[in-house]
Length: 173
Image 1 (cartoon, rainbow, N blue to C red):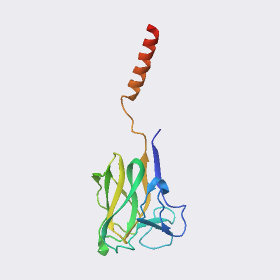
Image 2 (cartoon, rainbow, N blue to C red):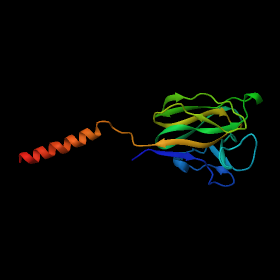
Image 3 (cartoon, helix red, strand yellow):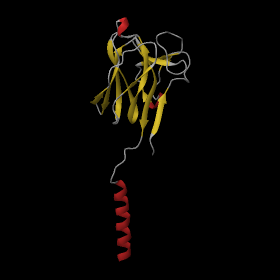
């Protein structure tokens, strides 16, 4: 199958609540909550919906909050807005994993009220994304990733070689 770009914008959700596993092809693990009420500086990049890392049970501390893909994907990044260093808060960044191994860490983003895209900076496949940030002081919107079959370069040659071999074998008979 061809590559498929996916942007998870949360815009079809209403009110607020936990993001359901499977929404947008992502397992959210009960770690993320969506809401649509206006709240500066937590401004979404599209429409009104956005998500935040659930901090209700752990307090507002610098913690990792993760989500994972149903199939391995190339994670492009997401938009963030919130309280930044000028208000005494830490930036956010991504750590990317494949099969439990950390494969990349993004640059850090110092947030403000303007939604800003934080790119992953990695073009390989991943199955889990960990967002490091100060829970309760940032929102995330428009999570962007690509899915595709990983091509095996020799697959075409093998197929045509096998078909040629069968044709040759048939001809000999």
